[in-house]
Length: 139
Image 1 (tube, helix red, strand yellow):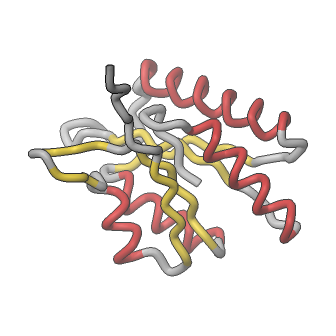
Image 2: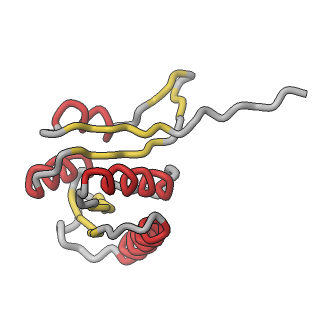
């Protein structure tokens, strides 16, 4: 399951652990650093590495609270979506669980760029956990 820091990653990790427990499955949590084409693919981008390590540590803590172990990894790629599909193929995963925020773009609900790519190209099931819509309390 990819994490990004943009959504409620913690609840997504907890959900993945809940599902994995039922099936005695492994949970892989990955953070992808997108490297600009002007830089070498293995460039050490310290702020992004720190962000990834922090987010992955939060994921590990969420898994521990759910009484489950997860494996974590930071990947570097030109495009996160391609890296996620490649990783799913390489690891032989059964399902990709991805959390996304409820976003609007030009007034319409927007899935972002990664989710449509995963839905189209992943060799396995893709579960999208969309955050609830924000509701404004009426006075």
